[in-house]
Image (tube, rainbow, N blue to C red; front, side, top):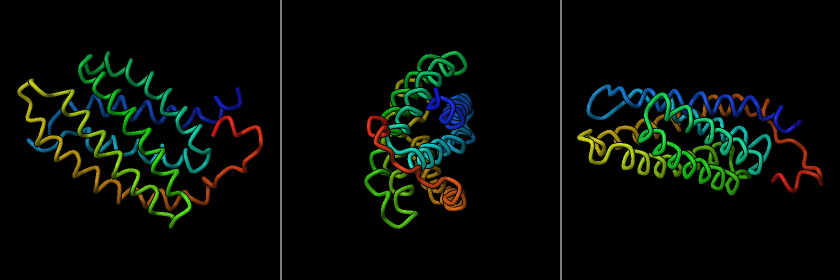
Length: 182
């Protein structure tokens, strides 16, 4: 019960980001971008802050719950193809983000969030755009390239709030009962 309470905020943020991004990806700005390109990278910030504070086990819980709720709501709001493509890409990308972040977490403060976001963004973008738009007539390759470019820029830009929040999102002390959650 306490785990649900402490993870409520990251789960709620993750669901809101996923649903908003899946709705906004349906609205192209041009042949290279959709509005969803600007909202989705915030999911990596939420994952990295959760991973920093609570560890990879609880960060994965946030991803799984965000995945389940986000896919259901996205299917309703954006259609099955986008919802399912998003869910698969989200799960692969976010779990990769957690693994890379955890591996690099003891390095210089900016390396873990930057490297994990860039690596996970590449996987997420490739999976999502190929599953969501191949065969639809939508210029999915150019949209994917543009989306990835925005994700790279956002990964660097989101280091600012990550760095600012580091003192407030310090890692929790590890207790022996936490080993199952890590």
